[in-house]
Amino acid sequence: MATILVDVTGPIARVTLDRPDKRNPINPATCGELVAALAQIRDTATVRVVVLTGAGTAFSAGGDLSAMGAPSGPTATLPELFLAMHDLGKPIIAMVNGPALAGGLGLMVACDLAIASDDATFGTTEIAVGLWPMMITAEITRNIGRKATLEMMLTGRKYTAGEAVAMGLVNRSVPAAELESEVMALATSIAERSPAAVALGLRAFYRAADLDFEPALRMLEGELGRVLSLEDAREGIAAFLGKRKPVWKGR
Image (cartoon, rainbow, N blue to C red):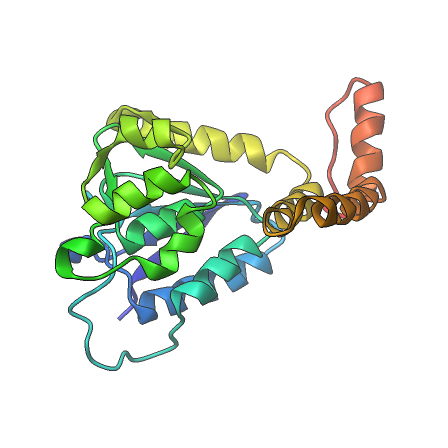
């Protein structure tokens, strides 16, 4: 049984976790479906932005503790999913329509951007059942500070949208009635940028984050050369000088 839905409208692919009765839990089957969907999106040139959300009233409540049997169909691990997300080369915006907890929080943080409903809640609740959020630690510590991360993990408490914004977990929160329009406006704006420059930039961003300072500078210097050699870069400069809208070729 499929656990996600994929809908493509113009340059935006909307991926929805689709088990609202279970608050959209994450298990190996869901990870496998997401990895497969991202691979298809990556190969679809017309898609430039991904919006990831949850069906019903939750983004994702985290790992599927009831999924004890062997799943049917392709599967993937959380590390495989997170790596696929960071190598996609197309921005992923989390549209957080409700609780993003445990592994669901990790999935949200792995997105490039996140906009949340002002009634959404956030937290690493694993400690309450004697577990620890191992896999998502790598994502969270790249987004917020050590002490904030450890307090979240050690207490297991739930945070408000306002607190999540202050911590840097999400970009901003908006009233629930405005969430979709706000996210789609952002996605549409980003989709108007050069897909070639965005792809190079996103991959360089994540590579640089895991390097020491001098190696990061050297790597980014090389990536700057790649960006400057793009046909889109030449078109963008010509359009700016000619005071016209650029026509991107994606190369």
